[in-house]
Image 1 (tube, one colour):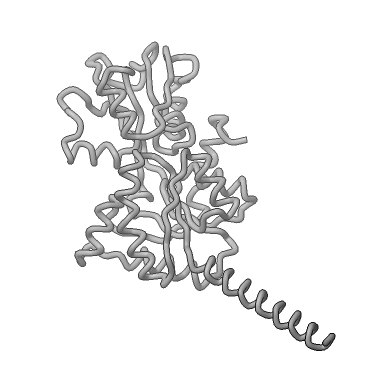
Image 2 (cartoon, rainbow, N blue to C red; image 1 turned 90 degrees about the vertical axis):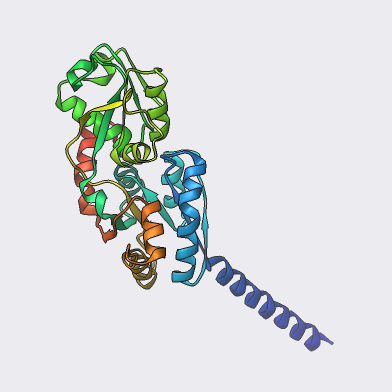
Length: 288
């Protein structure tokens, strides 16, 4: 009787162990991604859905898109391994890299991100240069945005304009499209945002360029990338990288995905590309 009980206990333990391994394997078969909310939730979801389907096919596992409320949440979800991969701007990558002690790795970026720019827009006829912003109101995007805050602030400081003391008021819209809306509605005199979103709005005729115009374009810098955990298995990193590098505008699927991502193609990237962003963030007092 005692032997039978022991055998039952051992079998039960083995069954639990097997179920545990099965559960763990199942959990690992779901690959979670997120993105900084630099545009409206509906636009982010529209861009994510086809990419999720493509990556699911290429990686051979279920891929899920997990939206987050703000830029800081995107950083924390990746650093705390609540997601496997995140679409970061240059500054949010730097924040994640510092926050994790160098335990995150950027894999790929759009070719355009190696030569990215921000634009300053206005509806005021008297604003023709950065110097004309003194005493005016200005909207950035998110405080953690590279192209909607950090780099525009950096170039304002280079022009001897301190946004915190030389402008009448500084606002944060939270997203690039919201910045365009604020300028168009006359809520602020000017706004700073990424050139990609601006070009998209112009192409889609979502902004009246007879009323809202670009008056300054920044020099180029490195920006967005797809980042993963540094300790992710090398084979999986390679598989993800290859999936992005394989996207080609000569195929219908590739063109559709690249158009949604506003990319001509994806290229490999590395952490060293973002040293300039980190230096700018520290110089502006935005990274301690």
